[in-house]
Length: 107
Image (cartoon, rainbow, N blue to C red; front, side, top):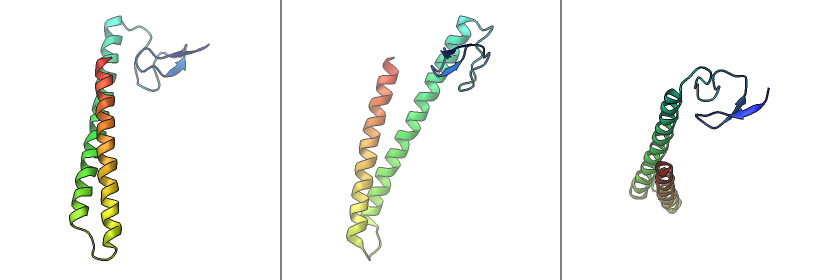
């Protein structure tokens, strides 16, 4: 028994396992076409996950803008600073996730 990489997700599994415990791909007795389909499904899932995170980054930017204009009167300067950090983190996160998504689509 040795440790190999799953053909679909690339994670380490036992060479004797018939099903990948990470992605659920059936490794024994499957055709090349079925494995290619499973790989394609994994890529789509990864892409959708990244798109969901980029949407959350956009929501963070929107919440930062909202907090910038509608914040409590006490400690107003602190809330404005927090809103700027939210806007910056959301914007940088959105750009990073979109670049990551672009590189995944090129593969």
